[in-house]
Image 1 (tube, rainbow, N blue to C red):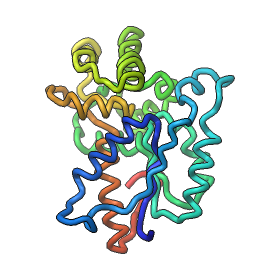
Image 2: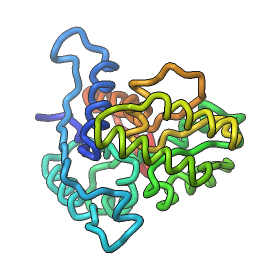
Image 3: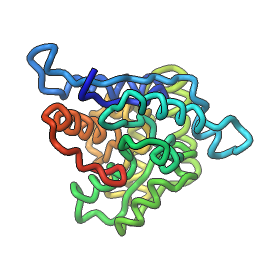
Length: 246
């Protein structure tokens, strides 16, 4: 296969399925051949990202992702996308291991936020404890001159409950809990727009989108970027990816 890209997924599988479903739904197609060429690596056995970031004695997820990146690089995809925000903890090392451009989901999400909401000053961030501890979103938000809040300990506990107890463990979205988290982030902590910094939260948004809260959905954005880049690849146009951003 030529003119294709690679999806590094399986972290978790339900969130990756959400990405693929949106990718295929949004691709302009009237026949089979109009859809995009891509390879899915659904690496479900990658060790838990948050567990390792919070406890470096736990199994690292880096060797598994490095193996995926190196294997896929031999096939020469036009670009790769990693469907897990927390996995971007090792983004720099993974990009250094390949000449294939890797999209940087958190960086793209924050850049998009700045474009869509130029007047916003205070951003709410909900994500796994690993992503928050990594500071990957906080760094990008600060770089863009934005103030941010991650809420308090109870809100973070509820975010982890939604991600792990409901979505990862049961493949269920607790819509009431999701809405409550968004409401508290806005009303209690003054967030003008809320970043969904976890692909499981993106899955929650896909299944429970009936709310009025302004959000930036990192996975939703990366879907659109993937389609745009794949169409450029097919047309033989330059990708113009720099530092993981389009």
